[in-house]
Image (cartoon, rainbow, N blue to C red):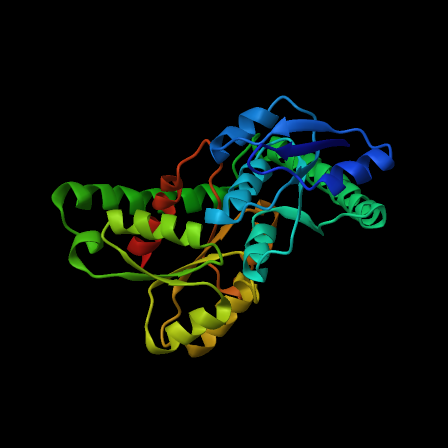
Length: 300
């Protein structure tokens, strides 16, 4: 497992990280941290997988954006933030987006050794998961199961109806006011989704946790709920269960997740979750989730 240190002149890593790695005779490669998070993937693209140490840059959640870009790469990397203690809410967002570990500076050899042991285990597990997912993908590509094909056909029917309505400027996107409940601990993600929904005439109510979402849903009826898979006070399954208990009419729930391996768990019938979408990677715009949202709108 390779070790990479990512920093720049404005945001250097704490010197204790370098000293501890050197004292433990752990080799590392220093990479220049880009000023634009979109430039991170190309920087790591040709490198062997391993662990990446990052400084905590919390303005506009920049380090979280870096983590997100790295997590979505096909090559596995485990991200470690080494810095002074941030706000807990920021750290929760970072872990939700793929952060593997956090090291409070100054870093000692003992703390570093424990972290590396845990990271190595996570790295090996992830390689195993990727290998299994690839084998399943190879098998699935040989044929499309009937139920999946049927579901795709139904969804395409809804989208076809939506396209016709858009041309004729009619249908639910034009004729009805709709308010979607967004549940995410990432303010950046909330803003992206809110802006996207506004472009098709849908307003959004933003909440950052299950408790906030339930407080809002008690006095407001929502047709659609879009939620992170993992939230600061639980997960989408807990959210769906609590919404079911308070809602007169159960909303359609779309889970936006960076963990595709959890999709089958979320989609169990008893969980009342309608669809699980993978968060789009750096090469894909957020608009990629619109077909699923529009299909759910027409299904209602």
